[in-house]
Length: 245
Ligand SMILES: Nc1ncnc2c1ncn2[C@@H]1O[C@H](COP(=O)(O)OP(=O)(O)OP(=O)(O)O)[C@@H](O)[C@H]1O
Figure (tube, helix red, strand yellow):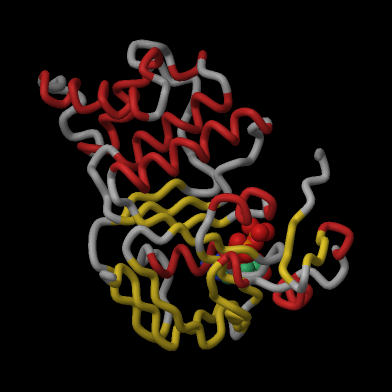
């Protein structure tokens, strides 16, 4: 299996605060990896190191292009711009927007919006989209240039359960139809356990990185010692019970 990301002896400090300590892991093609950990565990910092946005020590090797959906996007929703123009910004980073797009660009955007089940937002003003539609539009913008690796930092904020189900469905589609490797930071443990094939438990150091099926209650107890009501132990395997179930 092709190795997409290799992280060796990664350390990140800020003002002598050790935020990430001695992190080592590999991620392979078509992995769907969930990164979990409590607030302040260093999940976003790890993502930013992978993206080259922070100065760290150690070595990170990346094989391929990376698409990214940040935790808080700075997009101005009231800006008068259509769904298709937002997606094309992901392709050209503003350069071509003033000149206009060609038919090939438009065809590509249409196909992608179709794959994400939001073909109808093509001509719609961004400010008029629902939270779930907007979230999938941001996904379209992040993957329009066909990245090999897609990184998402807590994409589910503000989206209801149905919107989330749809979102995870289209993520799975990207993984199978476009062979994408996906890395997802999330606090939604029930979704992580349903959808990913590997899980990283992070709290400054990497407590474990293993197949989702092999995760044990002990692995989670290290991260969430005070939240055991969320966990049901099934033959020492973990089932995360959704609070809404
Ligand atoms: N660039 C930075 N400079 C200084 N401190 C930082 C920087 N980035 C993050 N931190 C600190 O590092 C710690 C980890 O933050 P980070 O955002 O990576 O955690 P997280 O696991 O993503 O948290 P959350 O789940 O709350 O989003 C926090 O204490 C944060 O204040």
